[in-house]
Image 1 (cartoon, one colour):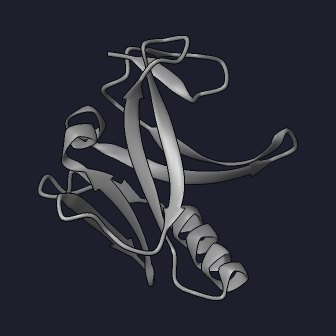
Image 2: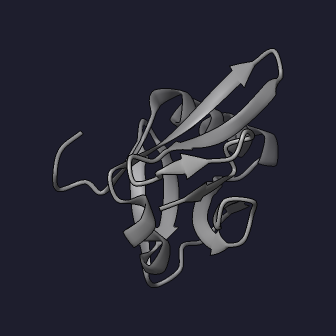
Image 3: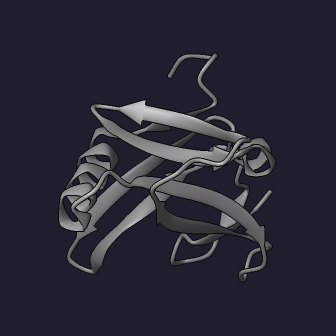
Length: 111
């Protein structure tokens, strides 16, 4: 990761976003946000959107895009947006170096 890119998108995440765009029949972007709540203090929110907000950081890779709002960016700096497909299920995940702890499901975290 380079220092000037605050959040990155993994190849599996980019591939999944492209596949979701094909299923939707239109280009979609993955919006990632951090909200208060969850069992560890903060939780990740994932949504598919077709338009970016004015204050969104756009992260692109291999023809796919993810969006992070400026408020969430402070808590996600240095993170990677990933997609995992395991026996227990398939999901987007955030690999966040700022998180001191997280819940077992990986959706909430504390700093």
